[in-house]
Length: 456
Image (tube, rainbow, N blue to C red):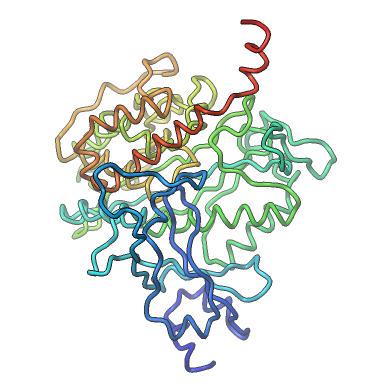
């Protein structure tokens, strides 16, 4: 191997295996923007070998999902587009196996010119929340579940999204949860997902057919929040590339089809004591601890305001429909999927809390940060949860705001949550979401044309 490529020996084993015996052509130097899109620069591998740092403008984090730029009140010199300093996190390096040449992706750490973390970077937001846990001697452990749809290619936004055509020549059917035959309908896509994940060194726990037509759920092994957020960030692109290979699209919209269930990113949480490695949700006698119920209470108290982070688009709120595989409440209960907060069946050492409210359209770094921040505040403030739900909770009062507009109003009144995530980040995020909401309000929908054009 060329001595200028000695840094490859510092990469994770899967990345080393991917380039072993082959010529590494290109390195993608990437970060996640606010929506979770991969941004950065591509360069020849030898150029990367000589590069100590890279620069990108901070204006990346003032963009809406449509590409517009938001003006931030009281911010001076916003559009000087000052440089951020990017340095490679080699531990994050992974293959880009869908490319035509041998390519690696490397997530970069982002700091300002003084060496301080840039607060608008989603990965830094998650690290900020994890620092709160570390100060208490705690290590959060998370396990995200990813739901998404495979859909027919859609090149005209004016046309509705349709399920994909399966190998039988029929469109994928709904209401086939856990069906092995339904998964087999689009087996080539699943095969590519497995192959890409193996090349990237990402361990899949399970793949199942969900309740929607062409809807799939992938579960990842539990672990460190930054590592898992990196994997979801990588996985979204991986899945889209696998679908394109098989002439269909993969979408992570919360609600791509009105008559189908929405797609969630359920988040499982537990917390370890850094000194002992023990789960702080379980006491020596195997019973639940106060920290366990306090974490639940934190979710109940702060998730309404945090909904703007875990349901980040106007479409996100179409998913929250009672009795349609999505919660509208923040009740909690053991082994109860009608509650917004579920306690799965487990042994005492694996006691955990599942947030079932987060949507798959959220940025994984921001979604994990927001959920962990809510639980952290519950423990620190020693909050008490409501009584556990008994039976179906679909009729419980609505806790989830019904629109992005209401979610942003609640976030305005949550200074403790904003401080946990970073006040500067929260203020910019709110401005972006307000602008997106206003842009959406300018669009006239087919429903309005159909029912109002000639009838009012």
